[in-house]
Image (cartoon, rainbow, N blue to C red; front, side, top):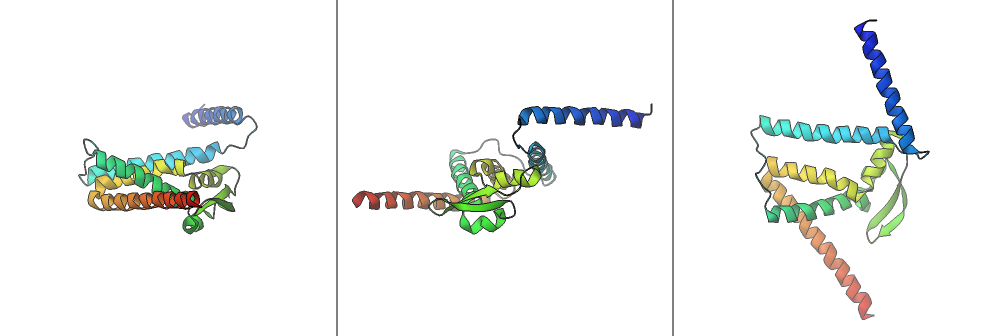
Length: 180
């Protein structure tokens, strides 16, 4: 038996094992594990590319993240992830993977996944879930603090101001309802 045949046999055994594990995990449900694995690979590769680029360009990760940066990064991540996942204006970005299902909150859309199985299904879940997108957004904004800290702080401050304005709009609407 040649080395090529041995590698092919080992590859087939690993693939067969992975398929059995996926079938047992799904337990009859339609879960796109292959799509999730692809998205995790893309995310990991993106982080790896950012790390290599940082090293090549001599950018160092800060020893610590200051409290103000952490607060603005948190609020900016929340706001940008929600805008990407729920805002009507960003619906064209989600449209290849989702279908309109109505509204879910003031100025927010409810959408469902259009494709079942595979990467398109996984992307549909990702782009309609603000909590899922937050990991990707925070990573991007965090990388921005390494590569372009001044510009990223301005973006974070702007998104934090938008989140504050959203909060005040909700408070105003609540006070109006309470006064009626």
